[in-house]
Length: 195
Image 1 (cartoon, rainbow, N blue to C red):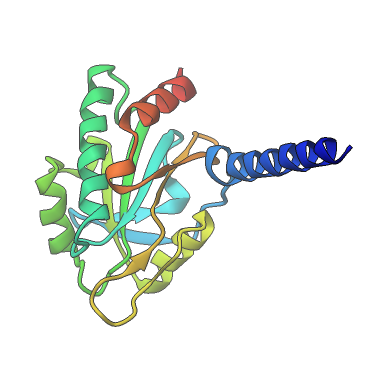
Image 2: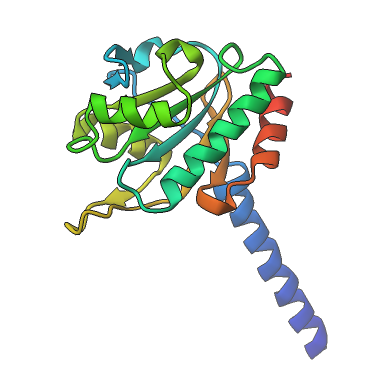
């Protein structure tokens, strides 16, 4: 009888862990992006969250002075962008949004230079790089559950997820940032969602 209870408890723990993983990572749920936020693109235009086009989007938070996770994630997204362009869906059915969490240092000119490193030279290309006030940045980050803080060392401590949403703002999946960013999984998830 003791073995039965141990087996039952073990299965229960595994089931709870799987449920938490599913709810927190695989199927996080809806996210209400605030409609009253306006930020500035890398190319100097206003970007109004109330006027977002109806399409799926992958949202990344980063800062340009990040020593590791952020630039690796942006590079992986650039590779993913090329794959989606080959399918003819990038910019029309799926867009990328990259938002700095360090708006004091990541001015429009700094963000423009950063975007250029990843061959993004226009806001019309389907990948929008944004900077804004600290309040606006926090509002968008809070809506997605992205956490960050500046301990004063120059390196910002932050969550390590990019967020994939469908055209109806359903938060479908979170992808781990950095070297663990699974580009194949992200590609397959995007293609399943938009087809």
